[in-house]
Image 1: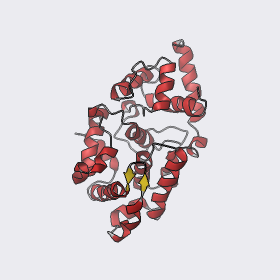
Image 2: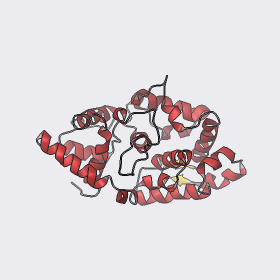
Image 3: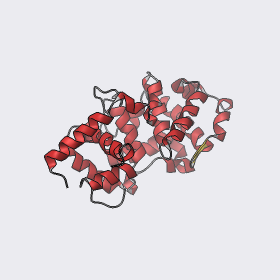
Image 4: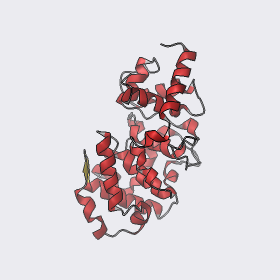
Length: 254
């Protein structure tokens, strides 16, 4: 393992390099960046994060298609759609996420926003956020009756030891707030110090090479181990190093 001080400098350098506006143009986060309204960003971000597996070009293409079908006004659309409006979505497909799943998400959003002003509320339990329990609880609070459908498999559950990469990434987008303008920082009930790393094959491989992760499986236990390692470098904002790990893995083939 690299000397701790050298590793800190290395991670900081890569974090600053990749946490920049140029990153937006290569990443699914560009989808919620199309919007200014908080709820538009929540809906667009959640769809983009949900689709975030596979080739990035395909992820961005398919997420953009969903925004087009919602007339680039996702909040207005989910509040006011009727069954006829949902017709185009029935043929949607991205990997195993299909039209049925898409429509279930639409209906879940419509139901949720009829009672709450922000999707952040679905992650809050008794005025608190605890990632493992809150993400697990979110699944039921958001999906409602659709929890019993096939759509539920598209929202990970850390209580079942899932790494929950896409949900953790979505939370990073919504919660982190810094001067670089990539993440949005539009939620204020969740503290960045309580976020967990969005663990994928790229970040996990780099983390193991750097001695930050020893666990071989990419599961929630690995997420906890890596996040705790990163807290040694920045306890207030450990997931900022997602930029460093991802950049090293995807752009530098470290």
